[in-house]
Image 1 (cartoon, rainbow, N blue to C red):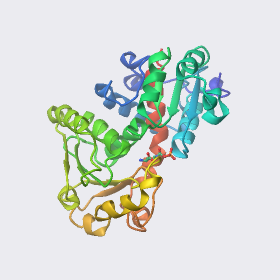
Image 2: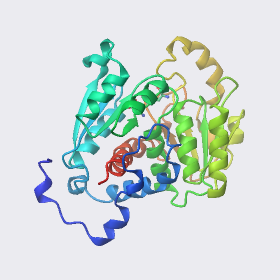
Image 3: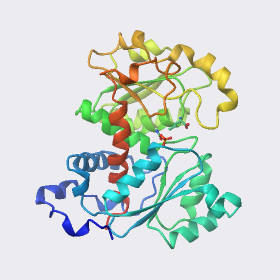
Length: 329
Ligand code: CP
Ligand code: NVA
């Protein structure tokens, strides 16, 4: 039990509209494509949580332990899950895989079976997406993807939450993603489609998001007022954009290709030149960590147009809302 359980304010009846819905209960969230219709409801819950002091959040995770396993470095995902779980009255266990038997060869299947007897949910950051698929296949508790090479759904949720704060009617909001069509780009397309956004990724040949994801996001987004497409020219994506978004050119696992990546992606830098063709109210976004002077011009993340710091903070609200939904009841 949380040490704050006794002094919480009773919830008002109007809060009930934002409470987690049963239809996500028990779901694993690996790509957001399993549950795209639930994205707007999770964002509503996140906004509701953000609207009250964290110290008075309802104890929606009371008595629930959540394992947070990291096979790769993390600042935001690690801290935001830990903080969010605590504020909802749950118990985070942050574990580096090197401290677990998993780190010396215990199978994913056995790890899934054991953890399912001990915790209410497992968050995993790993490399190949097949690893988290395997964990979710054998776990009997919800599994949440804290980043794989292919997807970063929790980032996608925080991103669309941040965009909805700046542009409350998200239908048709133009989001220009610039550079490497990586895990962050993929999850932005999926979450954006679920919110009716028009996500245009400008990526060179060899750095484009998988066509199947783009096709899915285009088809899912269209009836919701949005879309998804990939273009070569960063200026074409940036013209009239509400949001200019970028991520590192050298993701975890890409270090051996660093020189080639910097050379190929150089023309896709988020800078004042691209900002000048976007809308006057444009916001700059970056999932962080940033490489100032590479994918984003030096100083732009500290500009008044930057939403990156809200975006980082919103990891707490988006993930807390997600956990509240999947652990509802
Ligand atoms: N954006 C993000 O996931 O950051 P971390 O790698 O620090 O968790
Ligand atoms: N694309 C980056 C995101 C880091 C949060 C990576 O995978 O390293």
